[in-house]
Image 1: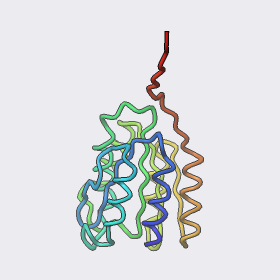
Image 2 (image 1 turned 60 degrees about the vertical axis):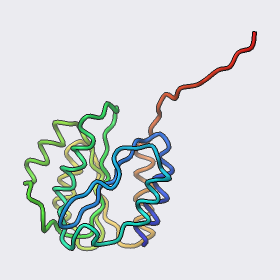
Image 3 (image 1 turned 90 degrees about the vertical axis):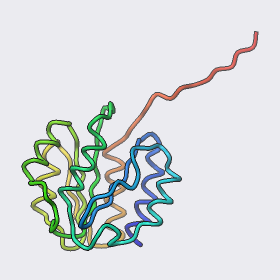
Image 4 (image 1 turned 90 degrees about the horizontal axis):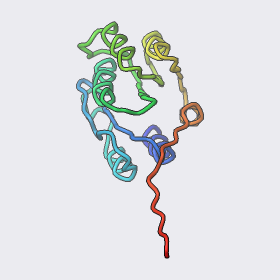
Length: 167
C-alpha cells in the first residue's frame, strides 16, 4: 500500500512524460503501454496487488519488457524506474544481455531496492548510462527517492497551441 500510494503521487507530477507500467513477479506483464493518461494509470496501480504476476521476482526480464516498450520511442530521454523488493529468482534473460540492450537503446535506469534487493545488480544496471541506484528502508525514504528522481529528470515538451485571431 505504501509503494502504491507513493507511485500514484509521483505519476501525476510527470505531466510531460509518456509513462508505461510493467509489473513483474514470476512473469512480466505490461500493465500500461506508454501513455500520457495519468488517470488511467492511477486506476491501474490501484488494482495491482503484490503477487499479481507470481510470487518470484523476474527483475531482469522486467527490464527487458520495459526496454521493448521504450526502444521505438523518439524521446530525447528514455528512463526506466525499476522498483524491486527481492532478489531476482525467475529471470530467463542473463544480465549481460540486459546490459547490452540498455546500452544499445541508450536507456537510463533508476533502480530502487526495498527489503532484500540485490544491490550488486541494481548498482550495475544504474551505472550503465549514468543512472542511479537507491535503497529505501521506509515509506518516507521511498517517498524521498521519488522526489530525488523527479528533480534529476525534468522534462519539457513542445505542446501544440491554438491561437484564435479575430480580424
